[in-house]
Image (tube, rainbow, N blue to C red; front, top):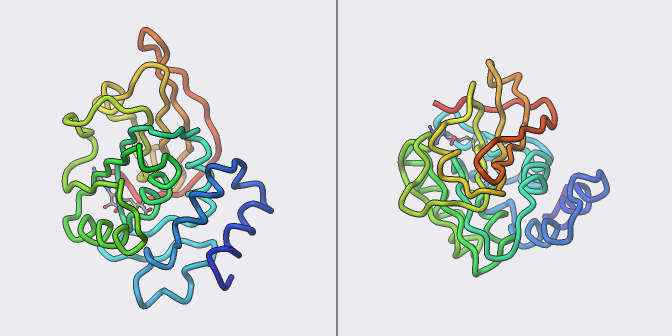
Length: 208
Ligand code: SAH
């Protein structure tokens, strides 16, 4: 595909982008800014690309599915674990609007800086990047309306459940093997019980 607009049309035609909020967020977040120079030619392909440190920017269809499953609202406060290129954080930031905030945690200092720079180039101002271990969440800004983990784990890190508001949702890939994980949406009910919905089989890099 030749443009970000063409990529959005493709994702919409496939039923992966469903809502107006997510469509607008994808339109506002040009993927070109998040792909390294040597892969710019593939920025609008529906495929993951390498971003360094053995990590990848997720394929657009995966970003669309996860963003829709978050059921974001205007002004939400969102935690992301695994900033990578900053693309997913940028899409979320545009979906929640200037009154909302995304806090994204990345364990590789270099990628954390790249994610921040990419979001700046893309004109995203309400995504904030921190170097650290996302399994611990980010207590300073908790609790969160939504949490997304973009790396696969065997279990849900307990700190993330603690930092999720009641009535809110966490979306993450879960599985014994990260290349054969299941994308799940977990709702924290009033009183704290968890309700888990299994969505689809996915491949991710591991949460370490
Ligand atoms: N959301 C990214 C794709 C992320 S790839 C994007 O839109 O481009 C997964 C990322 O999770 C990698 O950058 C990896 O370094 C990071 N990661 C893995 N384990 C982590 C941990 N415990 N804490 C923070 N980041 C982690």
